[in-house]
Amino acid sequence: MIVRRWRGWALPERRNAYRDHFERNVLPELKAIDGFHGAELLEREDNGRVEYVVETRWASFDAIRAFAGDTPDLAVVEPEAVAALEDFDRTVHHYSIVATS
Image (cartoon, rainbow, N blue to C red):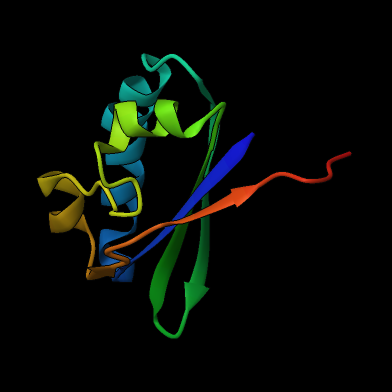
């Protein structure tokens, strides 16, 4: 199992815009991809901004490529997400799950 991790930041007054986009657009798209095994959207206050962390779980890099294309280390950030965020990571990190409980 592979975890794909990405971060973005919003101003407090735009806090719900990215959350709404994620629930309305991103999750349905991910759920339609074979090899997708779940996602979490994490949120916290960070120096006057709202930090989001998105962690998705995948069966393989082939499944990730079905979502991210041929360069899986690049972030997939749709125009609606760009409009909701003040800043975001342009790349993602991938982690292998080596222990769980």
